[in-house]
Length: 204
View: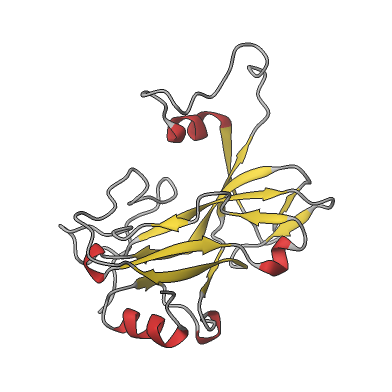
């Protein structure tokens, strides 16, 4: 069952969903919450190794996506003039908001793009919309505010598209989980964020 705006607010009030900073009133729609784009993006670079034996092998046991991003993607900060995505380009971004979904609350979420951007050819969160119950939760640190969501963003349109820090970039839809999971999500992306970003503490 998808949570309505009323149920989203109620879940936030009881701590079943934590969004830091809290969304502005206009960011909560009937069944979703708008999230904003943070300043740091990682832009995949063209590399000379491609065509010379370089192949990404995600099915292998030692595959490390994070290490590949560190090696082949250039980190950039979106300034006041914005960042222009050329057609056919791809980058990784972050949400400004940090999300926490304690598994005991029996709530998961999914990230969806915004139709206003999709009509321009801008896709957000390619094929990986699921935010599992337990995301951004540290059992040993109840004051931890949660983790931002990393976004896979690509421009499949015909025109350059400008990205601005703080612009609405995606929406989060919350769903009830039937039953309490035996264990919450503990994957490598559960607690994440831009490199060098200090942990954020929640305020009561």
